[in-house]
Length: 168
Figure 1 (tube, helix red, strand yellow):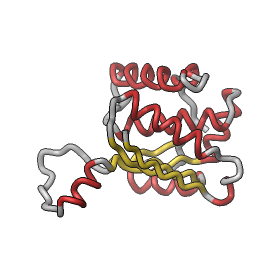
Figure 2 (cartoon, rainbow, N blue to C red):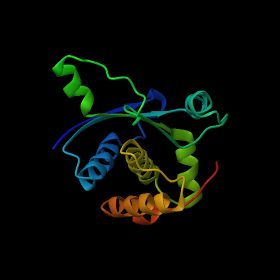
Figure 3 (cartoon, helix red, strand yellow):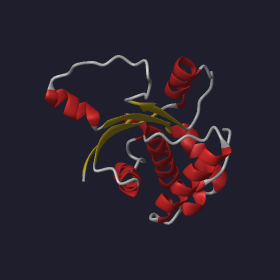
Figure 4 (cartoon, rainbow, N blue to C red):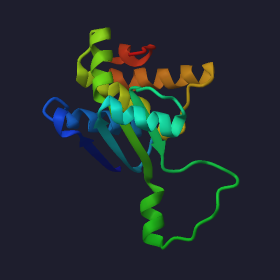
């Protein structure tokens, strides 16, 4: 299995973010889903940066915990683009980007009595599942996604974090 997981953390919180724990959570998700090769970026940033992205891309003017930006959208009307083979191969494994609001995550962790690392791992798993096509708009999809999160997070001793709602 070949994974390229790029963790980018705002300098202001880099001392308290365990990048290795995030890589472990994403890796566990990819392995659980039997993905052989994948690349993605995880960005840990401010509530303000996530709020701007949430407003610009989802039309919701407020922060959230995690945003997932898939590199590929399945669409029948998407144009076919001819790319050099080496570029096409590299892009084929690129799943997309996750953007996590650190302060929002910190508040969620405190609200639920969890460590910030456990919270960030939950959000990394959740976001990665979105990049892989999972959704929780309908109840059946939510049940499947939350079940997978619980299975994956149980490896780290915090499967119980997998299902809950929170508004910071």
